Image 1 (cartoon, rainbow, N blue to C red):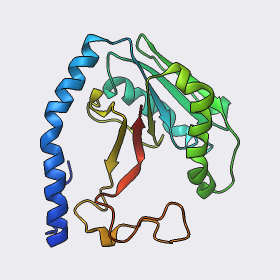
Image 2 (image 1 turned 135 degrees about the vertical axis):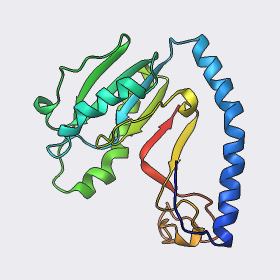
Image 3 (image 1 turned 30 degrees about the horizontal axis):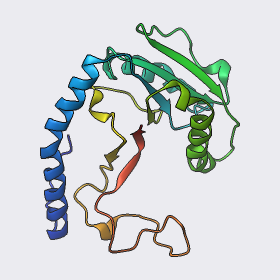
Length: 205
């Protein structure tokens, strides 16, 4: 739940209206998805860490997985894939429910955090082609320095899933820090873009 005392501007109000319209449609879609998954629990969702668990982040792995066991797709099969350059520092004495397993994947280290952030999608892409596509139905990428505090269910399992960035919720598109350089293949024109998504949790089929 997002709270705040700031009153949105006119463009922000329109954005909130669009967000409200999307939210209104969610319950029906959620119930349909939930019903389908409850009938067939043999699907295996993959929970992957989109941030490299290097020397600065291995300390978060245990609490991350322990809270995921309490709240993330409880009752479903899950593979926890951990990308790391420090395999020996990843705790393995974590109790997992039946059908859930921890898989540690060794990757190259990077000195700068910017390089880790920029190359994480490359790592996910390469491992998806080589492995994930043959082992799971869905891939959920979450930063390892997070923890679950409430239920996350099958409502996130869709072709593409993302979370709105709390720092830009209700803002006009003029405030979004999109790539605006026209020479970039990732450029988003100034008159396009309705939402600004966070990169700490995303999913796809």
